[in-house]
Length: 173
Image 1 (cartoon, rainbow, N blue to C red):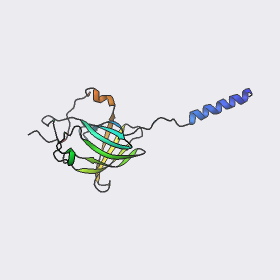
Image 2 (image 1 turned 180 degrees about the horizontal axis):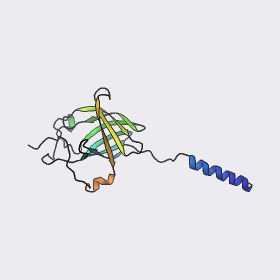
Image 3 (image 1 turned 90 degrees about the vertical axis):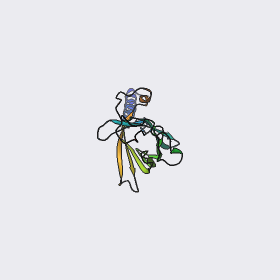
């Protein structure tokens, strides 16, 4: 092969490598997420979302209680096996199926009243924010929150900001 042909083949290979898509894995909703109070911006809780056999589920793993709130809060209004279980450790998000950056066909439970709502989740392209929407009937009639991704290592170390949780957990009697 002549030198000019070798240079041409080399240039084509370099251009092809530079323009081919990178095969890095797309981010998913699996991981640790922080839910913040929409008014104060303070953390309320952390959720751990895991994927099993193509289904995504989310468990509450940390709650930032306000002074006077019962740190042993249990889900008195929950149905079935969840009734009377500690809220911290409950699986609140169930049955989510991934469709690109969207997650659908799932449910989310409100531990304050035990009600289960249909749910959607949407991951930002960079994988750092997750819009979680619970709704009745059609998704137009619902409420959304945006959660922020945390490093998984945050669970094994104390939070940098130990802020109280805003919200309405049942008071200790």
